[in-house]
Image (cartoon, rainbow, N blue to C red):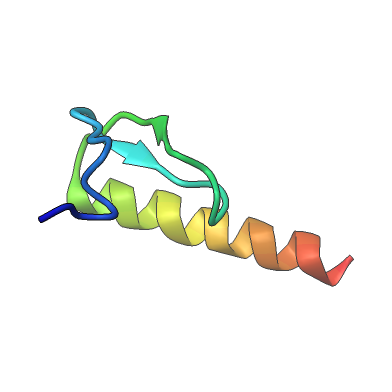
Length: 51
């Protein structure tokens, strides 16, 4: 049985900037920091889309 999403695994923490982005490395320091970074990026994308 083959799995569609099991082709490539990133061993490090990573993030996806777009739906087609394969992921870029990022540093994980804490869960709260991860959430702060996530919501900052969400705010940035929303502001960019409104312009």
